[in-house]
Length: 144
Image 1 (cartoon, rainbow, N blue to C red):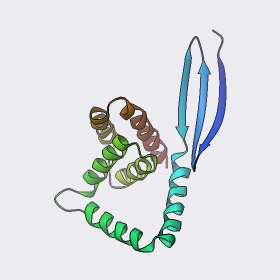
Image 2: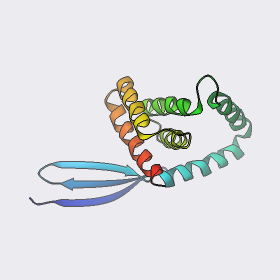
Image 3: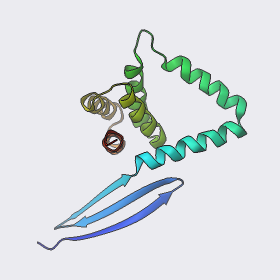
Image 4: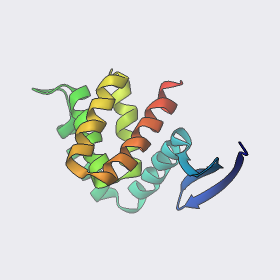
């Protein structure tokens, strides 16, 4: 079978998509983001935003700290909830942040996959696209 592969880099804002187009009897297009690099860029952009919108970002930081702290629900569960919401609302940066923070809080791949499944249930077809993005981020952040 004749196989052809082309790679293209597409930049949308600060998100870099590596589009791999493989042709083998049909078309398969795989889109991957360098989630580690994109996450670091997101952190840097957040710092700049904090300079320009100091009061708003300070308030958001307090809200985030209060909402995510260990309480009746542990941090890991709250990060998984946030990940499910991030997938459902299609927020790439949110997916990256909450996959990383869920892993840092002790989530295992099976818990992230179940979270992705619930997000797909609640958001339908687009959940499969952004759920795949969460899976890619998990794999990249898990590699160390």
